[in-house]
Image (cartoon, rainbow, N blue to C red):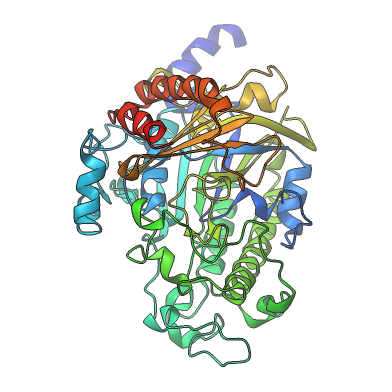
Length: 497
């Protein structure tokens, strides 16, 4: 008799409820401006204290070579998040194609005036990531930084405390002189300066409280959940309680081995004094300014780590952990003094690489993978786990076969682009960067030179290698719909040697 009633029972159940039965929960935790070095320092001892991210890493698989493709805007997070929520590669996620053979020189004449039209120039998408998840049977939640043109209220089921690109800053933040022993007018724990303190409670703590509320709500739901928990930290203004600042005495902070007072091409790649991020320390850079910025950066990461620990604890107490996949990453990395650069608008690894952790059923525990992936592959992974019927609409690839040890195959080369000012191709061994405005090409052997300190592009013995890298870059440009022809600039470089 039960078998006879089963089809009738199914016929009256809501379609999404039938679809969602047995599907895993998805918890996505998103940081802002976190370089991979924060959790996986290269050739040095790690200075950041992050016990909760460490335990998340130990419970799953850590991807050391996760990249952001770049940006059409100085607000790199805007492009990164557009790619993440649409599932489209960089120039497919942009509403117009700003790059053409003359664009770099146009930018030189109009910088930074011409940057503004492209900041929020996202493609209008029929569906965004949470909507795909909703159609796959999920209840969707969102809190924190959004920075995408679509209204979160229209694409998530539950939304709290939506934040913009960055908090309102006190201009005192940019007036600091970074002279050792001198008292500054701005401190990261002064709540009167606004920023992350605006509203009375630190934004990371508010985001955490929202996440705890979401988890409590999800306990009583039949549907699986998809939570998008987007912290603004450790983006500047790097504010945190004094107890966290005190954990990192500035004069004890190590200086990057690649530190330099000035990057020689900064004015030709969009990283000069007209870039907001570049003004977080005076020109030329001094070592103490780097130490103080890193002190505040590390403190904010540790404060963030405490909030993440509370979320992980709540998930475990909810009874939902065993059927939940957790993804952690950041929208891009950050330079803080390397080569004299500040910001994320460059093609060096500290800027384009981020930490990426996957944890959940079937994922290899305590595993570290060096496969090259894009951070936006997380969207494809979540849709893969949700058994979405729309995978063919997504440019990015699921990480799950790698995370579960089902394959070792991954991308052979990674693309990077910033306006018409920079292009990059990176393999597991080499990185080539092109600066079209000044016909400069840079080449690094990442095996011998992982900190990218020794440019070997001018060595004639490397010409055939570089020709091959150029071919790979042009193939990647076709894949991501990048219409800037870099051949002329590449050839011009060799004419000057």
